[in-house]
Image (cartoon, rainbow, N blue to C red):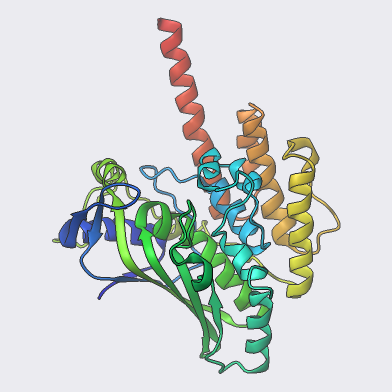
Length: 355
Protein backbone atom coordinates (compact mmCIF):
# COMPACT_ATOMS: atom_id res chain seq x y z
CA UNK A 1 0.00 0.00 0.00
CA UNK A 2 1.23 3.47 -0.90
CA UNK A 3 1.24 6.11 1.85
CA UNK A 4 1.11 9.77 0.88
CA UNK A 5 2.29 12.00 3.70
CA UNK A 6 0.92 15.53 3.37
CA UNK A 7 0.63 18.67 5.44
CA UNK A 8 -2.84 19.36 4.04
CA UNK A 9 -5.05 18.97 0.98
CA UNK A 10 -3.03 21.51 -1.02
CA UNK A 11 0.04 19.37 -0.47
CA UNK A 12 -1.77 16.08 -1.16
CA UNK A 13 -3.32 16.95 -4.54
CA UNK A 14 -0.13 17.32 -6.62
CA UNK A 15 1.39 14.30 -4.86
CA UNK A 16 -1.68 12.26 -5.73
CA UNK A 17 -1.54 13.31 -9.38
CA UNK A 18 2.13 12.30 -9.43
CA UNK A 19 1.36 8.92 -7.90
CA UNK A 20 -1.25 8.10 -10.52
CA UNK A 21 1.14 9.14 -13.29
CA UNK A 22 3.83 6.79 -11.97
CA UNK A 23 1.78 3.89 -10.66
CA UNK A 24 -1.62 3.99 -12.33
CA UNK A 25 -3.42 1.71 -14.77
CA UNK A 26 -6.20 2.69 -17.15
CA UNK A 27 -9.50 0.90 -16.71
CA UNK A 28 -13.18 1.33 -17.42
CA UNK A 29 -15.68 2.19 -14.70
CA UNK A 30 -19.41 2.69 -14.35
CA UNK A 31 -18.97 6.46 -14.71
CA UNK A 32 -16.23 6.53 -17.35
CA UNK A 33 -12.59 5.65 -17.97
CA UNK A 34 -10.25 6.17 -15.01
CA UNK A 35 -6.57 6.10 -14.14
CA UNK A 36 -6.42 3.93 -11.01
CA UNK A 37 -3.55 3.24 -8.61
CA UNK A 38 -2.42 -0.38 -8.63
CA UNK A 39 -2.79 -0.71 -4.85
CA UNK A 40 -4.89 0.98 -2.17
CA UNK A 41 -3.53 4.35 -1.01
CA UNK A 42 -3.51 5.93 2.44
CA UNK A 43 -3.29 9.71 2.60
CA UNK A 44 -2.09 11.21 5.87
CA UNK A 45 -3.29 14.76 6.56
CA UNK A 46 -0.99 16.08 9.28
CA UNK A 47 -3.00 19.30 9.68
CA UNK A 48 -6.56 18.35 8.77
CA UNK A 49 -8.01 21.71 9.79
CA UNK A 50 -6.06 23.24 6.87
CA UNK A 51 -8.89 21.98 4.70
CA UNK A 52 -9.39 24.77 2.17
CA UNK A 53 -8.12 24.00 -1.35
CA UNK A 54 -6.58 27.08 -2.98
CA UNK A 55 -5.47 25.61 -6.32
CA UNK A 56 -6.41 27.97 -9.16
CA UNK A 57 -6.07 25.07 -11.57
CA UNK A 58 -8.56 22.95 -9.63
CA UNK A 59 -10.88 25.95 -9.06
CA UNK A 60 -12.84 24.24 -6.27
CA UNK A 61 -16.02 26.01 -5.16
CA UNK A 62 -15.30 26.93 -1.50
CA UNK A 63 -18.89 27.99 -0.84
CA UNK A 64 -20.16 24.55 -1.82
CA UNK A 65 -17.51 22.68 0.16
CA UNK A 66 -18.16 24.75 3.28
CA UNK A 67 -21.96 24.68 3.25
CA UNK A 68 -22.12 21.01 2.25
CA UNK A 69 -19.92 20.24 5.27
CA UNK A 70 -22.44 21.93 7.59
CA UNK A 71 -25.32 20.28 5.71
CA UNK A 72 -23.73 16.91 6.49
CA UNK A 73 -23.15 17.68 10.16
CA UNK A 74 -26.82 18.65 10.42
CA UNK A 75 -27.82 15.15 9.26
CA UNK A 76 -29.70 16.37 6.17
CA UNK A 77 -30.26 14.45 2.94
CA UNK A 78 -32.33 16.90 0.86
CA UNK A 79 -30.90 17.76 -2.54
CA UNK A 80 -32.35 21.28 -2.65
CA UNK A 81 -29.87 22.79 -0.17
CA UNK A 82 -26.71 21.55 -1.88
CA UNK A 83 -28.07 22.04 -5.42
CA UNK A 84 -28.23 25.79 -4.72
CA UNK A 85 -24.41 25.75 -4.65
CA UNK A 86 -23.83 23.10 -7.35
CA UNK A 87 -26.86 22.35 -9.52
CA UNK A 88 -25.23 19.15 -10.77
CA UNK A 89 -25.99 17.59 -7.38
CA UNK A 90 -29.55 17.05 -8.65
CA UNK A 91 -28.24 14.41 -11.07
CA UNK A 92 -27.20 12.19 -8.14
CA UNK A 93 -30.72 12.01 -6.72
CA UNK A 94 -32.88 8.98 -7.51
CA UNK A 95 -36.15 10.71 -6.62
CA UNK A 96 -35.35 14.36 -7.29
CA UNK A 97 -35.69 15.24 -3.60
CA UNK A 98 -33.12 13.32 -1.56
CA UNK A 99 -29.64 11.82 -1.84
CA UNK A 100 -29.57 8.14 -0.95
CA UNK A 101 -25.97 8.04 0.23
CA UNK A 102 -25.89 11.40 2.06
CA UNK A 103 -23.20 10.90 4.69
CA UNK A 104 -24.62 13.25 7.29
CA UNK A 105 -28.00 11.54 7.17
CA UNK A 106 -26.26 8.23 7.80
CA UNK A 107 -24.24 9.74 10.62
CA UNK A 108 -27.21 11.24 12.43
CA UNK A 109 -30.43 9.27 11.78
CA UNK A 110 -30.39 6.70 8.95
CA UNK A 111 -29.59 3.81 11.31
CA UNK A 112 -32.20 5.09 13.82
CA UNK A 113 -29.53 6.54 16.09
CA UNK A 114 -27.30 9.59 16.22
CA UNK A 115 -23.88 8.00 15.78
CA UNK A 116 -22.02 11.29 16.25
CA UNK A 117 -23.54 11.90 19.68
CA UNK A 118 -22.96 8.27 20.66
CA UNK A 119 -19.27 8.45 19.73
CA UNK A 120 -18.84 11.70 21.65
CA UNK A 121 -20.44 10.13 24.73
CA UNK A 122 -18.27 7.02 24.40
CA UNK A 123 -15.05 9.05 24.21
CA UNK A 124 -16.12 11.27 27.09
CA UNK A 125 -16.78 8.18 29.21
CA UNK A 126 -13.65 6.32 28.14
CA UNK A 127 -10.99 8.21 26.14
CA UNK A 128 -9.23 4.88 25.50
CA UNK A 129 -12.27 3.34 23.79
CA UNK A 130 -11.38 1.57 20.51
CA UNK A 131 -14.96 0.81 19.48
CA UNK A 132 -15.81 4.26 18.15
CA UNK A 133 -16.82 3.24 14.64
CA UNK A 134 -19.11 5.48 12.60
CA UNK A 135 -20.96 3.45 9.96
CA UNK A 136 -22.05 4.72 6.54
CA UNK A 137 -22.45 1.47 4.59
CA UNK A 138 -25.71 -0.47 4.90
CA UNK A 139 -25.07 -4.02 3.68
CA UNK A 140 -28.78 -4.80 3.76
CA UNK A 141 -29.63 -2.09 1.24
CA UNK A 142 -26.45 -0.86 -0.47
CA UNK A 143 -25.23 -4.23 -1.78
CA UNK A 144 -26.66 -4.82 -5.26
CA UNK A 145 -28.57 -1.52 -5.15
CA UNK A 146 -28.83 0.19 -8.53
CA UNK A 147 -28.74 3.89 -7.76
CA UNK A 148 -27.00 7.15 -8.51
CA UNK A 149 -25.57 7.79 -5.06
CA UNK A 150 -24.15 4.72 -3.32
CA UNK A 151 -21.83 5.68 -0.41
CA UNK A 152 -18.17 5.73 -1.43
CA UNK A 153 -16.88 6.28 2.11
CA UNK A 154 -18.01 3.32 4.19
CA UNK A 155 -16.91 3.78 7.81
CA UNK A 156 -14.83 5.99 10.09
CA UNK A 157 -12.74 5.14 13.18
CA UNK A 158 -12.03 7.59 15.99
CA UNK A 159 -9.31 7.09 18.60
CA UNK A 160 -7.74 9.33 21.24
CA UNK A 161 -3.98 9.02 21.75
CA UNK A 162 -1.81 11.48 23.70
CA UNK A 163 -4.91 13.68 24.13
CA UNK A 164 -5.26 13.98 20.35
CA UNK A 165 -8.21 12.66 18.38
CA UNK A 166 -7.13 10.66 15.32
CA UNK A 167 -9.55 9.78 12.56
CA UNK A 168 -9.36 7.02 9.92
CA UNK A 169 -11.80 7.11 6.99
CA UNK A 170 -12.24 4.00 4.82
CA UNK A 171 -13.34 4.51 1.23
CA UNK A 172 -14.25 1.83 -1.30
CA UNK A 173 -13.97 4.16 -4.32
CA UNK A 174 -12.17 7.51 -4.19
CA UNK A 175 -11.95 10.00 -7.02
CA UNK A 176 -8.96 12.02 -5.83
CA UNK A 177 -9.84 15.24 -7.69
CA UNK A 178 -13.50 15.70 -6.78
CA UNK A 179 -13.55 13.46 -3.70
CA UNK A 180 -10.45 12.71 -1.63
CA UNK A 181 -8.66 16.02 -2.22
CA UNK A 182 -11.80 18.04 -2.82
CA UNK A 183 -15.05 17.60 -0.92
CA UNK A 184 -13.96 14.72 1.35
CA UNK A 185 -11.01 16.64 2.78
CA UNK A 186 -13.39 19.39 3.88
CA UNK A 187 -16.38 17.39 5.10
CA UNK A 188 -14.50 14.68 6.96
CA UNK A 189 -12.10 17.10 8.63
CA UNK A 190 -15.02 19.25 9.80
CA UNK A 191 -16.54 16.15 11.40
CA UNK A 192 -13.12 15.34 12.87
CA UNK A 193 -12.66 18.80 14.37
CA UNK A 194 -16.22 18.93 15.71
CA UNK A 195 -15.84 15.65 17.62
CA UNK A 196 -12.38 16.62 18.88
CA UNK A 197 -13.79 19.90 20.19
CA UNK A 198 -16.78 18.17 21.74
CA UNK A 199 -14.60 15.78 23.77
CA UNK A 200 -11.92 18.34 24.62
CA UNK A 201 -9.14 16.71 22.60
CA UNK A 202 -6.59 18.28 20.29
CA UNK A 203 -6.81 17.55 16.59
CA UNK A 204 -4.70 14.58 15.55
CA UNK A 205 -3.93 13.28 12.07
CA UNK A 206 -6.61 12.28 9.58
CA UNK A 207 -5.99 9.09 7.58
CA UNK A 208 -7.90 8.51 4.35
CA UNK A 209 -7.68 4.88 3.18
CA UNK A 210 -8.75 4.65 -0.47
CA UNK A 211 -9.24 1.16 -1.86
CA UNK A 212 -9.85 2.35 -5.43
CA UNK A 213 -7.70 5.47 -5.69
CA UNK A 214 -8.40 7.01 -9.06
CA UNK A 215 -9.16 10.02 -11.25
CA UNK A 216 -11.40 10.26 -14.29
CA UNK A 217 -9.18 10.52 -17.34
CA UNK A 218 -10.76 13.59 -18.93
CA UNK A 219 -10.53 15.60 -15.70
CA UNK A 220 -7.08 14.24 -14.82
CA UNK A 221 -5.58 15.14 -18.20
CA UNK A 222 -6.84 18.73 -18.04
CA UNK A 223 -5.61 19.23 -14.48
CA UNK A 224 -2.27 17.59 -15.20
CA UNK A 225 -1.60 20.20 -17.86
CA UNK A 226 -2.02 22.95 -15.27
CA UNK A 227 -0.36 21.40 -12.20
CA UNK A 228 3.23 20.50 -12.97
CA UNK A 229 4.84 17.37 -11.45
CA UNK A 230 7.25 17.34 -8.55
CA UNK A 231 10.83 18.36 -9.33
CA UNK A 232 12.70 15.31 -8.08
CA UNK A 233 15.95 17.25 -7.90
CA UNK A 234 14.67 19.82 -5.42
CA UNK A 235 11.58 17.91 -4.20
CA UNK A 236 9.53 21.05 -4.69
CA UNK A 237 6.58 21.83 -6.92
CA UNK A 238 6.87 24.63 -9.48
CA UNK A 239 4.85 27.71 -8.58
CA UNK A 240 2.59 27.30 -11.62
CA UNK A 241 -0.66 25.63 -10.62
CA UNK A 242 0.44 24.91 -7.05
CA UNK A 243 -0.92 26.98 -4.18
CA UNK A 244 -0.53 26.31 -0.47
CA UNK A 245 -1.52 29.58 1.14
CA UNK A 246 -1.31 28.00 4.59
CA UNK A 247 2.43 28.56 4.32
CA UNK A 248 1.68 32.28 4.69
CA UNK A 249 1.67 33.56 8.26
CA UNK A 250 -1.65 35.42 7.96
CA UNK A 251 -3.71 32.50 6.57
CA UNK A 252 -4.97 30.24 9.34
CA UNK A 253 -7.91 27.93 10.15
CA UNK A 254 -10.72 29.22 12.35
CA UNK A 255 -11.98 26.96 15.16
CA UNK A 256 -15.34 25.34 14.38
CA UNK A 257 -16.54 24.77 17.93
CA UNK A 258 -15.99 26.70 21.16
CA UNK A 259 -19.21 25.94 23.09
CA UNK A 260 -21.04 22.88 24.41
CA UNK A 261 -21.59 20.49 21.51
CA UNK A 262 -25.33 20.04 22.13
CA UNK A 263 -25.83 23.80 21.96
CA UNK A 264 -23.62 23.89 18.85
CA UNK A 265 -25.80 21.30 17.11
CA UNK A 266 -28.96 23.23 18.00
CA UNK A 267 -27.47 26.39 16.55
CA UNK A 268 -26.46 24.46 13.44
CA UNK A 269 -30.08 23.34 13.05
CA UNK A 270 -31.19 26.97 13.36
CA UNK A 271 -28.67 28.12 10.78
CA UNK A 272 -29.66 25.44 8.26
CA UNK A 273 -33.37 26.08 8.87
CA UNK A 274 -33.00 29.80 8.23
CA UNK A 275 -30.94 29.12 5.12
CA UNK A 276 -33.83 27.15 3.64
CA UNK A 277 -36.57 29.35 5.12
CA UNK A 278 -35.23 32.51 3.52
CA UNK A 279 -34.41 30.76 0.23
CA UNK A 280 -30.81 31.96 0.55
CA UNK A 281 -31.83 35.62 0.11
CA UNK A 282 -28.79 37.71 0.98
CA UNK A 283 -30.60 40.50 2.79
CA UNK A 284 -32.13 37.96 5.21
CA UNK A 285 -28.82 36.37 6.16
CA UNK A 286 -27.62 39.04 8.59
CA UNK A 287 -25.64 38.07 11.67
CA UNK A 288 -27.93 36.87 14.45
CA UNK A 289 -27.15 38.00 17.98
CA UNK A 290 -28.76 34.78 19.20
CA UNK A 291 -25.87 32.60 18.04
CA UNK A 292 -23.49 31.86 20.90
CA UNK A 293 -20.99 30.15 18.61
CA UNK A 294 -18.66 32.69 16.90
CA UNK A 295 -18.13 30.25 14.02
CA UNK A 296 -21.74 30.73 12.92
CA UNK A 297 -21.77 34.52 13.42
CA UNK A 298 -18.36 35.29 11.97
CA UNK A 299 -17.82 32.59 9.36
CA UNK A 300 -20.93 30.64 8.31
CA UNK A 301 -23.33 33.58 7.92
CA UNK A 302 -21.01 35.85 5.88
CA UNK A 303 -20.04 32.91 3.62
CA UNK A 304 -23.71 32.12 2.97
CA UNK A 305 -24.50 35.82 2.45
CA UNK A 306 -21.61 36.29 0.02
CA UNK A 307 -22.72 33.41 -2.16
CA UNK A 308 -26.34 34.57 -2.07
CA UNK A 309 -25.21 37.99 -3.33
CA UNK A 310 -23.27 36.29 -6.11
CA UNK A 311 -26.32 34.28 -7.13
CA UNK A 312 -28.38 37.49 -7.17
CA UNK A 313 -25.90 38.99 -9.65
CA UNK A 314 -24.27 41.39 -7.19
CA UNK A 315 -20.74 40.03 -7.59
CA UNK A 316 -18.97 43.18 -6.35
CA UNK A 317 -21.03 43.12 -3.14
CA UNK A 318 -20.34 39.38 -2.83
CA UNK A 319 -16.59 40.04 -3.06
CA UNK A 320 -16.88 42.82 -0.48
CA UNK A 321 -18.76 40.47 1.85
CA UNK A 322 -15.87 37.96 1.79
CA UNK A 323 -13.80 40.52 3.69
CA UNK A 324 -16.15 40.11 6.68
CA UNK A 325 -15.41 36.38 6.96
CA UNK A 326 -13.24 36.00 10.08
CA UNK A 327 -11.71 32.71 8.91
CA UNK A 328 -8.79 33.98 6.84
CA UNK A 329 -8.52 30.75 4.82
CA UNK A 330 -12.19 30.69 3.79
CA UNK A 331 -12.18 34.45 3.24
CA UNK A 332 -9.27 34.22 0.81
CA UNK A 333 -10.63 31.18 -1.04
CA UNK A 334 -14.07 32.72 -1.47
CA UNK A 335 -12.59 36.01 -2.64
CA UNK A 336 -10.30 34.32 -5.20
CA UNK A 337 -13.12 32.12 -6.53
CA UNK A 338 -15.40 35.14 -7.03
CA UNK A 339 -12.60 37.21 -8.56
CA UNK A 340 -12.02 34.49 -11.15
CA UNK A 341 -15.71 34.55 -12.07
CA UNK A 342 -15.68 38.33 -12.31
CA UNK A 343 -12.65 38.22 -14.63
CA UNK A 344 -14.33 35.59 -16.81
CA UNK A 345 -17.54 37.63 -17.00
CA UNK A 346 -15.65 40.80 -17.92
CA UNK A 347 -13.58 39.01 -20.55
CA UNK A 348 -16.77 37.62 -22.12
CA UNK A 349 -18.29 41.11 -22.12
CA UNK A 350 -15.18 42.49 -23.83
CA UNK A 351 -15.41 39.84 -26.55
CA UNK A 352 -19.11 40.57 -27.09
CA UNK A 353 -18.36 44.29 -27.34
CA UNK A 354 -15.74 43.66 -30.04
CA UNK A 355 -18.05 41.32 -31.95
